[in-house]
Image (cartoon, rainbow, N blue to C red; front, top):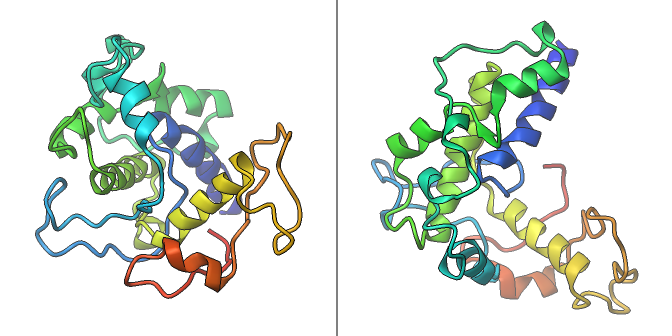
Length: 225
């Protein structure tokens, strides 16, 4: 029913972030070649080339003496006792309070079953320097794992990446954190704003989108995610 859908969606979106997820909910079809695996050239990249990942590498691992890599075992602040396996039990949000459901899905600072999922998936060929395509794939796997815990396994609920949604996330971030788009063409600014959602929904016109677009996309439209 509508209540179950609403609660499940809220929990899914909130706690998937703890599974090292930072992308938006995605739509579309999985465009990887049949039989391709994470870390192979067949993996599709959805994060824009223009996205600056320098701090993803430097601050998280390369210049952080406490973290050794991007695996569950390489993150110093994740307590090993927090990694609790998932036995396949589906948690119906109607049977629990919000706090109870949160504690079932999120065990400590991580997500139930994420440890086993990571190592059974082995998404990164190099756990110190994963590629954007590999991280995109891992986000998809992890988010679908969270959805499975609340019974969202039907085709309509399966998460698949979408390049335009990743681009829109980048444009929104640029609008919030830079003054690049503070022009007469795009009135309004986020300068000085403490609202993390400032810039959400911003999308440049087709002409200004062109430097960002991969070869298989002509433009992105503004629609619900």
